[in-house]
Length: 373
Image (cartoon, rainbow, N blue to C red; front, side):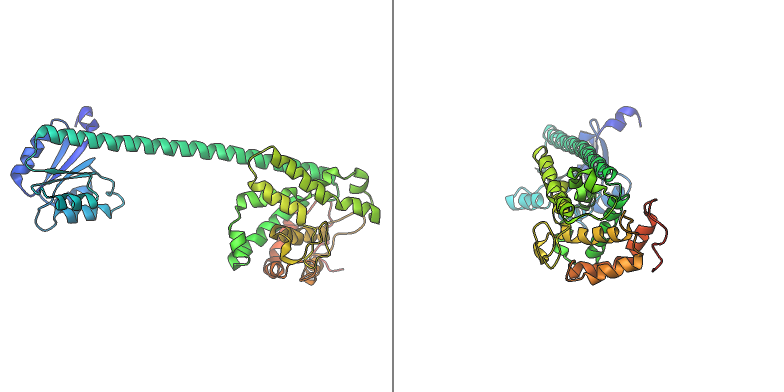
């Protein structure tokens, strides 16, 4: 087969009348690669090896008629998009309507002129080619959009990382805290999805944005002076009051970012993490004194992650707490500091928290985490 023949479209002609087959093939062979097939079953045998660009299908055939054949074609994912033109001696409106309703693209009555048949085949193949070109264009366009979206997401996450590193660089007491709290949070969310806890809300979250946005939960510490942030000792009541303002400062910072961008997917989560992770289930937290489910779920989850990591981390005024003691304190906070439903989840992943703590411990923290004093 020469190159010119390979470039031509392929048309299958299916008719139990040998004379009709010869006539149709003679009409088409000058323009298309053709297969003359005496029955629908022979056509299906051919379709195991060859996928024609168009099928001319007779209706009145023994064993498998044209309507049955096209119905079978349309149920096969590999074959259903091959365009089918019915060739038939029937000329009543009902037969034509039935053929079109089964998925045929055209209906040509016998006897037909060569010029008319060739023109209809040419037009339909042109439509198919244009549809394929449009489909390829849409696929390429979708790929370009996906690539652009990924670049934007990478930029957003890069900015998050830089801001988080700035916070951690200033707060010299909390090395590794931001990374670990993200890992704890991810563990809690995955278990909640598995258990169906707060399923409607959690399943609506895009974890691609949720987890990285947790990096900004302490972003407001940028506004706290070094004298308080890195004080080598316990804060006074007045200093602690100032420290607590990092929550509102964090929310304000994120809202300023929101004003400069139309992409709020991750910023909405970040604002919840920053604004509500110091609220307590019993209403004794800050800055708003919210209680129960009035506290956004992101804040209730971060509260567990944040407190656990604070307990096991070294501070200028305290040694890191052993992991089993930290676990006990978290469990004792059920219904007071923490959402009982979240604590139920924590019980099931507490070993995972411990593994994260051990695998990602700060180099400044001693190795006595596992030991109960």
